[in-house]
Image (cartoon, rainbow, N blue to C red; front, side):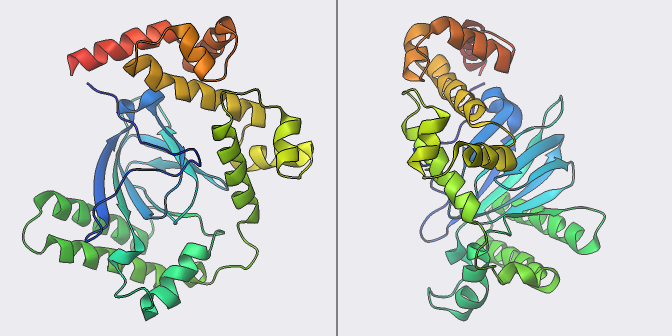
Length: 303
């Protein structure tokens, strides 16, 4: 079976087109076991995202929060928010994901809906995400709405676009009723997240080069301790640990989809010592790069 992946730019923005300009909405049924190492890497997109866990557990992180979602839980992820996901326990984890642009529910760019609700919500970086639990009545209703939205997107009968638009309208109405503060952004919220996003962009652009903590910090006119604190507070990892993780993740599709040698792949991903690359890979993934390549080739041929 072919492994799944999402296309991400150098600034970590997802490059996938979700839906069309005429109807900017897309439904996904994501099986985490089909992604490299069972995880979706850090990325962001202008669109809003809604997810509901069908089975298993997922660990979902934003730059400011970390959540464990269990079967029946759901989540809303705001526009332009860095996030990543991975299986939180052994076993298969499957989720419904809905990605849609604000234009889906506005009547015009200068509409009252956009001015009063959508722009304030999108600019409220302190409201990065919200978890829906089955125990809370209105949240359970939101999860049922997502299920109805998924069914409508599968059936695609005449009028299904209107159903989806109506369902999303219902979800935002629930937000307005129960979480009005989400539509009143704090003026200084999100400053650290934006700085961190710029740092992650820098790391991605310079991944093949040696990157020191001093160089990373000085590039953004902050101290080394401030740089380390940002990474540990928002990503729960040191800057060096994040750089190593990015380099290993970058090597996964190269191992699966190219005929480059292990040494060539190590160099392209910023490792100038093949032995160190192999040791780091095994420590993080539990197998060697060559074993990963063989498993990937085997799973592709089985599919």
